[in-house]
Image (cartoon, rainbow, N blue to C red; front, side):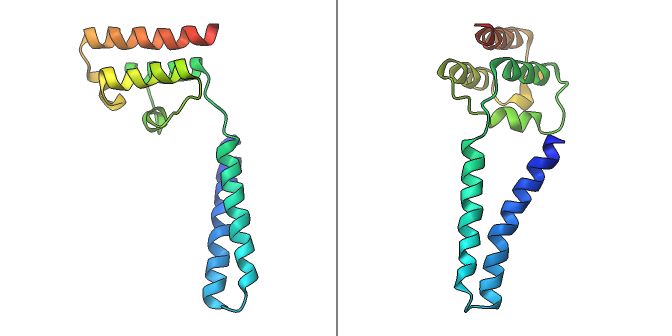
Length: 130
């Protein structure tokens, strides 16, 4: 249900930006339509600012599912585009990709590299327990 709400919100923002632009092209004397563009942009900025930061256990579970090869859908892209606000979590998250490369390659790693990655995942998970 949450995904439907996000999709509706984002599509509404897109429509609120595109519709006035189309209106101005079709009816150039209606300059007031640009107010809707500003409202749409404000809504998008507020959505980005109010985005919840992923917790360390969520990040660790996502990384673990990618490593085991059980990830689905957009999990890999979601993991690559995480940007944790917590400094320690962000460092460990960045190390997972620096140390072992792109997440889509993790299931194909050798056992030594997988063990290093498991250690980083465990460290991320421990940060959530503090």
